[in-house]
Each structure stands twice: as structure tokens, then as C-alpha cells.
Image: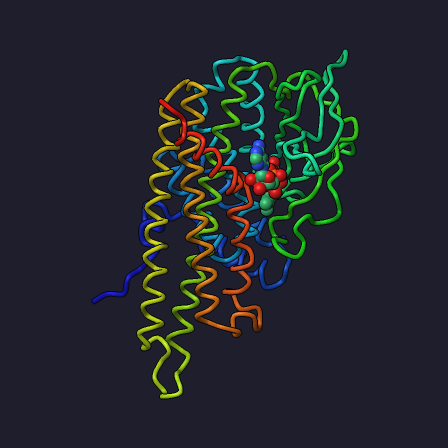
Length: 392
Ligand SMILES: Cc1cc2nc3c(=O)[nH]c(=O)nc-3n(C[C@H](O)[C@H](O)[C@H](O)COP(=O)(O)OP(=O)(O)OC[C@H]3O[C@@H](n4cnc5c(N)ncnc54)[C@H](O)[C@@H]3O)c2cc1C
């Protein structure tokens, strides 16, 4: 009987991105050296950041999942960084109809995407959360001036911070309403990215840093405000981000499984037989493989829900929220599976998992962010619970 190839559903011929081998080799190099310069040169030269321009929605979603899963196998941190760009591109593709409902919004988006494709740029995004003692507090505000707008304040969370060229961010008007802004991240003295990594010891290659807006001037044609579709676009972006996050960390879990499998095959018991021949080892690995396969099916279900968004030209806020909740629930469940795989494989490999930079411990420490990134596990549970308890 042929060996069970666990990731066959995600990595098929149809979903395999061009230049995959070059990109993943460069990701391995980034992990080995701690320097992602080569990785980003190869990534920018590949099709991966520009799938929106190359594929219809169906294939765009499938190739994005496969790409992030493959980079996540090498480094969840690095994959998280590029997922910021890839999730934004997915959201722009799926929300095209609703973004076109307002002519000035459409102009801002078209200008951004033309520049991204023409110059092969990468886009980061931030919701400008303050991240301090008050949960959900916005860190920045935007003010109307005679010539345009000025943004002041900060955002605690910005990944892909020193590599991206463009920044899309959400800020708040004086009345608290959300406003979207597109700006240059590079060569912009009013936009200061911190020298320090936020998750330095844990998720280095995600390159997450604090960013300050020091009276950042933005022109009127770079701002999306007072557009009823902006709130909905934010929900679509979150849905895409949840799908991307689940895919990339599941890639990490697949690598952990594969490393554990190989450990079992090459390590011998006192009897001289391979560890993998022990019933305890094969049953434990089998249970985790089943969990991984189930998580893949959940991902495919989430991808189908994301595509439903793309199929509708306009979408009601309640329908967008409903779909986001279902995709968040998938992300929640996939994150639990990933954590279980990381914990149990660490036990199967034992202390050797912590020696010589072994991937089981290294990747195991990174995948815990699956439950902490947007949306947080407890918040998803709270939202699903509240909805489930609602009287009809
Ligand atoms: C690795 C990483 C990279 C990131 N990169 C980016 C980025 O590039 N751009 C970006 O915009 N963001 C980024 N984020 C931030 C992300 O968008 C979220 O803001 C962040 O993950 C929220 O985490 P927190 O710990 O601040 O949670 P909080 O929202 O502060 O929650 C803390 C606790 O309070 C609970 N809680 C929160 N709200 C409520 C409520 N209303 N009622 C009851 N309980 C509540 C939560 O469940 C949790 O237990 C990143 C996050 C991570 C982990």
C-alpha cells in the first residue's frame, strides 16, 4: 500500500504555486541564518504576492492556502508576515464589488493595486490597536485639515513591518468612526517603525513592531472614510486573515508531524527495532494525523465560505458578520488541533526536540500564536456562545 500523503488535499497540482521550491528553500535559509533578505527577494520575484492578478477567486483562494501552508512548514513566523499581504490581496479580490459601490473608494483601491502590481510591492496592514491596559482602545486618530488629513498616535501591532512598502491602516475620526488610510511605509519620516521587535523571542520572522504616526499628512485621495462599505470590507479582511492564519499554522503542524514520523523511523528502541514499530508510537501519531486531516477539511469548508463572500456583489453587514463567525470558528478549531499536534509530538520526540534547533520545539513554540492572533480564541468562543444562547 502506498504511503499516506497527509497534505495531498492542500498541495495538489492545481494549487501548487509557481516558484514554490525556490520560495520554500529561501524560507529554510531565513530560518537557518535569521536573515530573511534572500527570502523576500525570491518571494517578490515569484507569483505568490500577486495571485490576485493571475487567478480567478477560486484558484486565488486555493493557491493562497497552499502557499501559506508550504511557507508555514518552514517558518510560521515568516508565513505570518507574508500572510498580511496575501490576506489583503484576497480581501481586495473578494470585496471588489462592494468596494466599487463608492467611486472615491474604488479610486483609492485601484491606485494602490496598480502600483503594487507594477512595482511588485508588498502591503502591510494594521488596525491601530493601542494594545495597552484598555482592551480595544484605538491608538490613533485622523483629523481633517485644509489640504487633506493628519494622523497622529500609534499602532502597537504591525507585522511585515520593515519589509512592506505600503501600509493600509484603520484609524478613527474625531467622532470615533473608522477611517481607512493608504500610505507609503518606506521613505516616510512621519511614520516611524520601532527598532524593537514586539515578539522578539517568539516569532522573530513575523517582524511585528510598533509604529508611530507623527502628524502623518495624507492626501484626500488616499483616504477611505464615511463609506458604509468600509466596515464590511474590514469584516471581509478579517475573514481572509483567519483563513490565512489557519492555513499557515497548519503548515507548521504538518512539519511537526513529518519530523516526528522521521524521528520514529530513524530512532531505535533498546531492542534495536525502530521506535516507529512500537504500537504506542504509531497509534499516537495516527491519532494526530487524523486530527490534521480533519483540520484540512475544515480549511476547505472555510475557503468555501470565503468564496461565498466573493460571489456576492454587495453583502449585508449581518451576512458578513455571520460568515466571519463561521470562519473564525474554523480557525479556532484548527488552532486547537495544531496545539494538540505540537504538544503531543513534543512528548513523542522527548528532550531531543529541544536540541540543535530541532523543528518540533522551534515550530511548536511559534504555532501557539494561532490562538492569539486575530481573532483571539476566547473572543471567538464568547461570540459563538452568545449567539448559540440567543433566544429565537
Ligand atoms: C503575531 C501577531 C502579529 C500581529 N500582527 C498584526 C498586524 O500586522 N496588524 C494588526 O492590525 N494586528 C496585528 N496583530 C494584532 C491582532 O490584530 C490583535 O489585535 C491581537 O492579536 C489581539 O490580541 P491581544 O492579546 O491584544 O488581545 P485583546 O483583544 O487585548 O484580548 C485580551 C483578552 O481579553 C479578552 N477580550 C478582548 N475583548 C473582549 C471583550 N470585548 N469582552 C470580553 N473579553 C474580551 C480576550 O479574549 C483575551 O482574553 C498581531 C497579533 C499577533 C499575535
